[in-house]
Image (cartoon, rainbow, N blue to C red):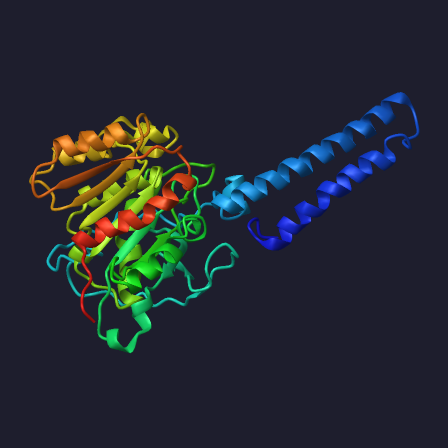
Length: 378
């Protein structure tokens, strides 16, 4: 059974009263030596407790989509097929995918299907992508804006936002918990928000609950190449997506916010803007990440370091939210260090480090983004 599916949830609902009934009916009916009776009663108590805890866990997980499946929960999920040395990215066209030079590779044509998760809207599609450059295999969720299938926009190339979950986090979280498409669709129809194609790739790539820090780590994982090259190339090959980096952005929360800021500052040739909700600069914000454990990676993966050591200030706009002690100071440090054309908009939040805090912030964040990636006429 799927961890986030209704059958497993219903099974958990059923097991709780059954375990309690078993405890009440059989407590005095166990026969045998005292040790046997004690062991039997203890087993029934533990069974009742486990079923109750499991139900609460499933309800919380389904509400927040922390783990997308059993493999992620158990730490058995390894989506790294190989760790090749990524080819150098060409910059001749300024495209979002940053492909290498030479003759263009064959298109990455994918098959898409509805997401098997009742928390995710039915108009969100998913595909399993085998990253050519990264050696990473994983699901990618895609949603197209209301204008996409409008005949008036049949020749329009749409802007794109990559959506990154925190760690651990599911590729469904943005759509199922933050309701990003439900919140933005009416704003796109009214012209308050640009008609973005929304793309949410898998971010949990390694087993044993290891966070990649969205980095390319030789011999271990090419997470950065997966997120900033393989996924964008797939989108360009399968959708009417604008290839110009001026029409691409990346957004994330928590560890995903750190990655969004980092990717945009590191690759202004691929992204025009980034939204970070309660992210952080120092990779030690996620102490178990690969970038936190390596002193060199920790330094060069810090968005503040990237910003202050850039050869020229990147033409990137940042929208960085956080409360005191949870991202606000990092946002202010980026703002202080920024020089034109880099812009940083720090937003102080007041809620805890939860999706319930970030969900209502989505509309304002995308209204801000529309200032930098505006609506285009069809």
